[in-house]
Image 1 (cartoon, one colour):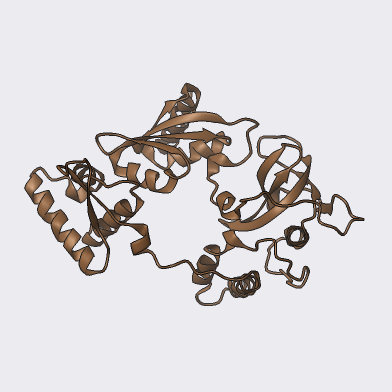
Image 2 (cartoon, rainbow, N blue to C red):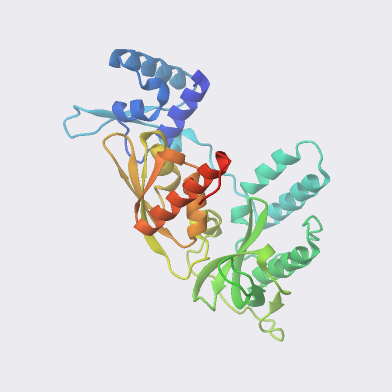
Length: 337
């Protein structure tokens, strides 16, 4: 591990911490600090801490007990991050069109422009009525997806209920859905609709490329809004959905996953505000989460390799083990008996 990587990992860990982090946990989580001589580790850590503070990173030392006998380290987010930039819906629409025009032409800096826009897309509009139909979105690859996006954009702005046929991954045939569209977001190359699904009776996310019919208004003869967004609804809460949260399963089930000290701090950083995370004495920890999409969950866990172990339910644990065994057979050029 290079020094730069070590400093980045240290900053990420202290930023993600919901409480001060002990020296021992820092030592267990960052490979370069796992030295046999504790004094060598402390000298390296103190050098790193001094260098980061000289660069303006506000590393703070806080007591972990009432007597101040044990101390921990953290980086307060309010002192590290720049203030959030706020755009009006009209400004976001303009940035959206410019970014997509640049990206579709494959011009220089296209990836950077797309990346910048993705940081803005979760907060696209807040019920403010723009001029529907005045933003030609010809940059969308599929003509059917392009038309769906036109109609859904209009429905979101006008608060009009829509109807379409939708193909879920876990169903053989499409189902007709009636949805109150609350917002649209773009993630990992796909457009998603967030809205209240009247078939399921709750807010769901829909991938536009799984829509199997034209998007139609549920009440074509009415000009008045069909619904109001729930108080406190935030599109960014749904644009942050993880693979196991999408609505493929009928019912969610509870799962517990043990993460090693090497990755536990990253898991707590990314998921600690959404799920219960129990830190362990060795720097690892157990994540409690609700699973709707089991296939998405298995795929996510596979990325951690030996650093993630399913504790429960046993059915999920067995499926992960079987998937790992299948991968091993393929890597070894064999076949499963």
